[in-house]
Length: 280
Image (cartoon, rainbow, N blue to C red; front, side, top):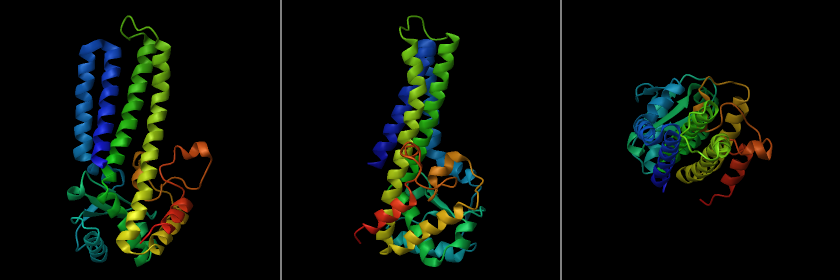
């Protein structure tokens, strides 16, 4: 199911690039844009983990660097029936964590220094189990592709707008206003879809995490503590990587219904309530 989402998102991104190329320069430019989309898809699929680690300035560590953390990841991944992922540490003071990688065999679980300093052992286990759940469901690649698609659609929208403004579209285009409307609306829709995918993944990862642990309180307490501290401690990270973290590094709270469409994560209160309903 997750891989179907991945290839579906890649297909949408490719089609939009081809449409933009065809509008600007006909079939020859469509072929050029098709080639660009293939390169982007290839890079995203194979190298997304490196890009995310770089966003967070994280370094992969071994068992000798943080034996307690490494042992915890190893123990929980066995419960989750997963291969051992790489373990990484980010130098941020804000407590947070994420998982990345294209599949369970090439996955990374990363925590911040602030997370290790803030949480107790049971809470840290809840966070690690949550990130392993993302790996189990292959959420990391889906999220990365969704983010890439949103960025690509924004780029396509910008190309189309400038093409219309400069009159560089092909002769015979009958309705440039409709094309302009699509160029404005499509990026907004893409971002809303990206955020919806991210929120759905967080609920699923929370539920799987408590089943891995056989306990609800650790993750519930961890989410509350991380959000409380994150409000006070800023994180220096590219906003494009915000949806990867267990709690959004930049914002919290419920907000308005409209703002909720653009949230990377469900409200923490809603996540805690959903965890309470999970059957162990």
